[in-house]
Amino acid sequence: MPGFGKLLPVRFIQLEKSIDGKLQTGTQFLSFDDVKTIAEKIGAITDIAELDVFLRYHHDFGNLIYFKDIPEYIILNPQWLVKVFRLLVTADMFRDKLIGHKEWDMYETTGKLTKNLIRCIFANQTDDITNCKEHILSIMEKFDIIIRPKMLIDGKELVDPHYYVPCMIKTIVSSEILEQLIIPQHKSYCLCLEFDFLPPAFINHLMISCIRRFTTSQFCRQKNHLTPALFRQTGLFDLNSCEKLWEASSTVEMNMAKMVKVALNILADVLFDLLKLETYGDPTYVLPPRNQCDITFLYREHRRMNKHKPSNSWGGKWTDIAGTDNALGDDIERIRLTRNELQHMKFFALDDTRYTELCTILQDVLNRFDKHINPSHLYTDRLDKILENTVEREDVECFKLEITSKL
Image (cartoon, rainbow, N blue to C red; front, side, top):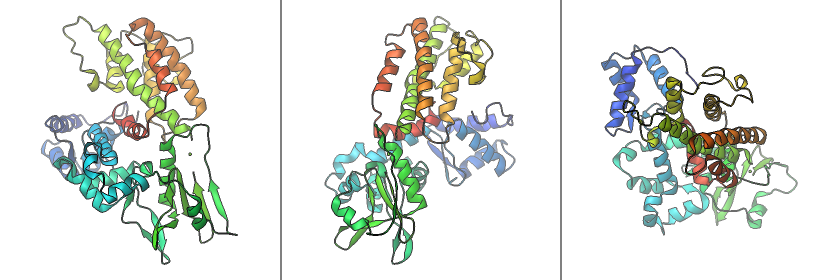
């Protein structure tokens, strides 16, 4: 985990408590200047650089959301941000009000999120969301949820004033559209990712990477009206005046999504159930509700109690645990290492080889916990169900945020 074991000033604790106090009173975000004022008032920092260290440290641990290049607001509750993203992308709570709205119908088909539609969506939100609208949109760009494509218009590269949401695009490339896009006797490079199983979320990230890097091609959707050549799991981009790049989908992101789901919904439950079992009848120990306990907290409690010791030591690496090390302490370490590996992935992707290895490891781990804890619903059965089923598109996008805020 980034920052684990790093020496930090003790005075940071006072600032952490002050920020947590704000969160407990219902404050979901603070401006950078607000945090700076609080820190200076209690003497928690000496300069801006030190405040940046504090914020990045807590961002790495998933306690808050902070980006140095967009520091206007610090999100105190990552789960609040996940809910906001769901509200804005799917608009489930007020969809009925927008059905029949021309721009909403276009959004659900083409993924085009116009400025006017953004205003309509935010108009239905609470003040805490509307007050930081621009910052929320910037973070959504950071997380590859929305993007404004670049297009070549009258020889000039211009950025579309409207956002596009690749995961919402339902339009499929038709033969009529292809006739407009394909230029005879000109080269077109084609990047095609094809597997037996194609999760939609992975292709969305790939599309956004291409949209950022290349100029998006255009086609005529209506008479004299050019629109970006972005389709369901497909995009067309101009590399230069005579070359185009198609990119079209893979299993590695679905592997990652399933494993994150296992960690969030099963591995954390295992540690919680074990802690509940070990502290049952102890009036001096107050166990927080399950929804307030993540793997980080639960692991720390087991390590502090030191009842189930690993065969070697706490806090080791995968190589420190032998295949024959089957103590509960070893399995607690395996859960921590799985959680760390998922959270520290450079990309939201897990190759088939490592995915299979982790499935095998966790199958054995959960089988041993089934025997020790005897849960009403076996952990191994729950694991099999997650691995067998498909992860929904919206859930994949949320897992990308939850991997830092809830693991």
